[in-house]
Length: 124
Image (cartoon, rainbow, N blue to C red; front, side, top):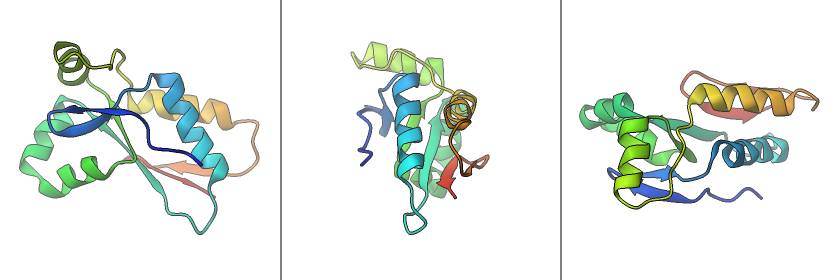
């Protein structure tokens, strides 16, 4: 079973502290364990833009809070803030990093998975 990733509080959001390879391993493990009766998992990116949008868009803020993986996609707001607060985040992880590396990990595995622009991950 895939467990929740370790997080730290950045501006009120539980942002993952994993590096890219650990995050990829978690996402791939979930996809491999997914069954049709299990709901999709949610991956979102916290960066300066998403944080600013969330300030004026409560449903968007709720989506960020509800993410199974909230990745540190933004050097200034996440990585620098984490360092200043004595946190664990040392690496920016972008949504495109996740998409590319998950695809590469799953190439040899039969089946299908989908990643939408808003970050929903599901297996089929």
